[in-house]
Amino acid sequence: MRCNSRSENTVARQVYDVIVVGSGAAGGIAAYALATKGLNVLCLEAGRMIDPAKDFYTHKFPYEWPYRGRGKPGQYGHPPQGMEWKIKEWTDHLYTIPEEDPYRVAPGSKFTWTRLRAVGGRTLLWGRGCDRFGPLDFKAKSLQDGWGEDWPISYEDVAPYYDKVEDLIGVAGGAEDVPNTPGGKHLLPPFNARCGEMLVKKGAEKLGIKVLAKPLAVLSQPYDGRPACHYCGACNYGCDTRSRYSALEVVIPKLQGRPNFTLRTNAAVHTVLVDPATGKARGVSYIDTQNRTEYEASGKVVVLAASLVESVRILFNSRNRDFPQGLANSSGTLGRYLMEHVAFNDISGFFPQLAGRPSTNDDGPGESCLYIPRYNYGHKDTKKYLRGWRFDFYTGCGMGAGPGAGLPGFGSAYKKKIKELYPAGVSMGGYGEGLALSSNYVEIDPEGLTDRLGIPQVRFHTTAEYPHAFAILDEMYGRIEAILKAAGA
Image (cartoon, rainbow, N blue to C red; front, side):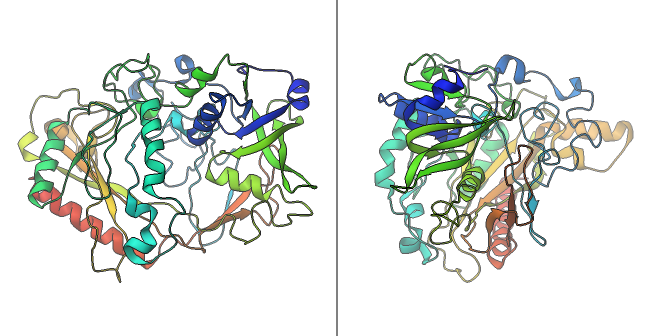
């Protein structure tokens, strides 16, 4: 299916004001902002159109699947660590399965590349957290610790656009400001916290740690023609009620039918075309993923929003006589300073005061309703680690047995114990800031690996297990243990 589809000959003949590559978090918003200002926009998406009624299994429980959602043993090959929760029976048709379209990781490196090729991109299944960067995040080198580089823009430059995005997508949360965590300006009421979340909040506040309502791109009340969340808790399956934001269900419908917007699906862009006379982009080359035919599209401006790694891959694969190292790579920096969070979510416990209570529907908006923003500004032990972290925590009854599933045991007494602990479980995780290192990078695979369309594929080089990561992990583990103990777990 193609929205506002036109023949390939028409696309080839026309010169668009802007070509946007990708329709997800960045591409969807870019296409909306440009097209609603009157520019003639072509949006090229490598994946297919999604029908939420058919492609999202929002209300199908794990026990209704033949293999409880995990898939037949060996069906998905061996998903890399970190992708096990993503590639399930209810999402395998959305994600790119690594063994079907592989990429390379250099010897001694570890990296998980998550790919979701479809209209809406990874906004179809994202975590929906919408806390803002603060002033110190944009100027961390000069205002925090001297590491890395400052952004060339400030929070004050970006704040009005945060306002616009919150107004467009619908964000529920609190407006309270804490140091370097600005409150939103166009927020819906926050979601009510669960019992266990309130216990974590009380424990953290005993230690002087602030706990806030988590800003979520999930509707706590009807908004802009979309219904409020009905607390099914299956956001990671895809939301078929449009109650949480995705580009597919919010911005694309606002663009459909506009004469100045064309969405071309199943169009895998691999090269940015350059005018040799000006050295500027003049369009793109793409492959129709259905018939393997190559086409060109012309535009005055090209916006690459194909996700981080895919956009870098396109720039590398756009090398030519004038740009032998790839586009935008005269410094040799393209693909370098690959960053991820230093993250985990595996500290679990139980609240004795909640054990044995009746089971209730605690699914809520599919995410925790509270969170702990970064609070350790100005810490002095910079020789151990830099920057800081945020904490998320999850409690209550939900699909699955919860933390109790990991306890040893067997038989009726074991089942009784699991049922008793089911409402009392709590788990916490942290997201520490990773550091920008030149040794973490992506390149075109030097051994000639290509994807299923014949486009040169990438290879990752990472050195994630460095002293900073270990030090900040140790600190986060210790802080979480202290918070849970203060909360009575």
